Image (cartoon, rainbow, N blue to C red; front, side):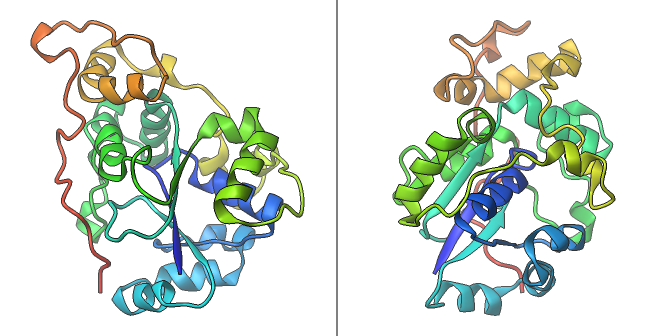
Length: 249
């Protein structure tokens, strides 16, 4: 059976995968070809991403064991899910830095690699709205900060959700990974708050698009006013085709 490990890019899926490995001895795979992470999650992780498509999806869905699959896509089935979310400001700034594009483009949900066949993941709020982990059955929401600031409580929550005994404790290895040759550009800002680097004009757009979800998740008490009073709260479904996705062949 599948258990999705879902989240918008740079919301902490790699952090969550390390957490699951440390605390439960659970290895995970990814829908995407990520050979640089193979040394962290085992050779199956590299092979899986390179082979992803409808046959492998069906094989994983019907497997007699749990297969934890990282995804940034929209949901296309009702399998259980661990949904990882990070403060949208930090996620957008981190993704912009990683993909070497403006933070405004990240906020709009643009994907500079669409021409390679990768699906558009949409805006931070649209992705959350498509999964809506607070009301989706068999789904648990875990914040990025929960892994760092409350590892024991997070381990207990995940243990109950997965019905899995804990076999170890989480070790935050990101300072070590930053200095490694594995994927330093991925880990160099995992523990940073990057919201202060967002230009004012981009921040106004961020609140218009993501304000409602930021408030719902408790990252803010009230949505800051923007220059355009007609667009103070924005629309979490804006700038995205939020129709269910399907595995590519």
